[in-house]
Image (tube, rainbow, N blue to C red; front, side, top):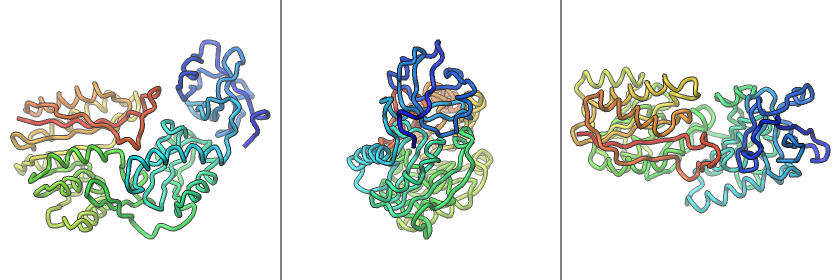
Length: 398
């Protein structure tokens, strides 16, 4: 990396809000920065000094002229040196928090901006770490990130270079094992269940640690229950419910590979006799189950992001409403339903309203029992609403 004294300087436009940066907001949008020919020529991922309109230093940033988020704040010290030692200090701080929260090394180790590493996701699976370098600077420094993780006793580091965020940064898709080896799916203990994570070929990093507290709440409702888990992935809520004493659980997902991992997880926890799977489209499966007259004491719907952007918000809210409407008739009288959203574009008020409309149009009266969020290994940066993306609503239906 370049020395602070020789690196490029970028400057906010006169009407841009420098106060937001000073108060902790981590992004500068393209229309807030002076983008002259010199700035446009900066290579994506370059470290630079950010100045306000009066040329006063504000922060050390990483610049990507190809992104709508043209600059991301790395350090509020405008003279900070961004090197391996700097990365090590940020990861060590994140690791100290997780060590206090969990008694086993299975968690999200780094949650991007909220842990001071913009665009960087790191999930830990024992001595294996999966890194998502979703910003150009972290792509350029992936070797340093891997070396820091090795120094923590993590033997295998996987770079998962896939997903929408990388496309928005102009980065190519690539998943590769940077060091060590991944012989197969990794068994992950969580909430008394066992999940099998495919950290190389699976969805995202292979497992969704963010739902851990919501899995635990659902398990409290599952004692002796018949459970339906829609958009189940590798068994998410279904396996947690079985660990909580469910009579039986049916997991539904479009991915045959994910359901096979779910079956392996059920077998690993000795619950295969109480576990079933059904592959198919969730909406079609909801309609088919209704036609069969199926009833469940607990239904969980945890779909992918239906509203990944503001442009998709209205369509996404309609999809969440439809899920609730189709799922409502499958819940036995006095039973429970959990509805989840990982769409940051749909805030809690909007998602709750869409869910309540859907339940009402499904012919059910509901009580909202509990609102859940991502676990504490997915901390929220208060200045950045996008970090509070996960919502889970649990209702009791008459």
